[in-house]
Image (cartoon, rainbow, N blue to C red; front, side):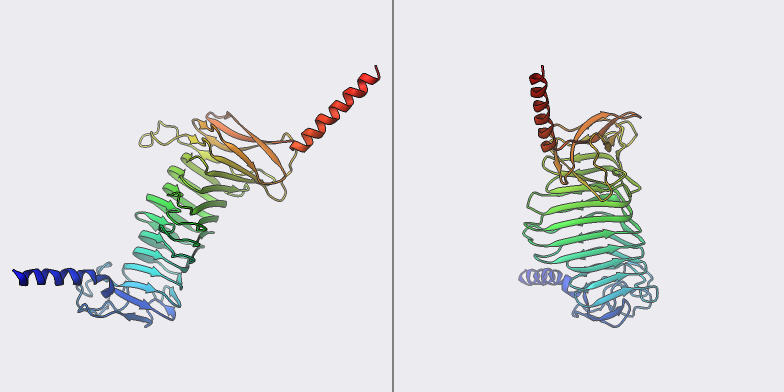
Length: 390
């Protein structure tokens, strides 16, 4: 009986070390298939190069050379240097896990992974990249940058973009200038549990962002979350919701479309719009509450939220000019919505009936308070002169 207990304890201990046995470390500069990998041995079989299947002569953990794309269980520990995935040097199977530290990963040819962890460093994507789960999770004072210029990034499950609880002073940036970001299978979490002075920013200057659900600012721990779009297409087939310390911003009128079926901005979060000479790209909330399968996704809620308005070069701040910011196919609820004027131009807003149904949030340039005061004083002086001349 005692021997059986000891045997089971050994199995448990071996299982707890399975992670270490799968680690394969990269150091240096070169293509993925280069001999820059160093493996942690001890499991009776090595993985050699993470994601390498056909022709891999490793033995032990599985059956090599069987053509199975997910046979190789090596974890790609990229902690130093620069590694490139190119047509001439790329894994032919799925990479079980990628851990990117203070290093650089350049995806220049198709790459398939199961789990991806960006803990620091820079990842440049210019080709197709698919991963089941993607975590952007730096430590305190670390920074993570992802630059997508082309290709299609596909999330076959969730995206967790944001720091863990207790992480302070971390900076995370996803820069989308080309290609497609596809998170249409499950939720995209933008901004999570990070603490003070921690920020996550999704900066879209081109390309297409496609999602089924986008949740921004998952907790109130202090992490700031921003989504900025100045060009490209944005489409969310169910809803966008801002929970804590989050800002969604439309910059100018160059974006082709900004669309979602439902928009909910919780109290204290911010909808930000920067207007250029043509105003801004209209945010279209197109859920009608009737379409089959989407009956629960419609309308806009801005109750006790903040509407931040700014101006860009070329904007003509003529008093009385109006600009349409947001359209809903159904209703816009804006009880307690406050306006923050971030430039010298002062705006007010109204919710009016849309020309083609639904409701519009429209902003109007109004006189500055000082101008109103001067007009009032001028009016009083004029009245006194008129009285004196009677």
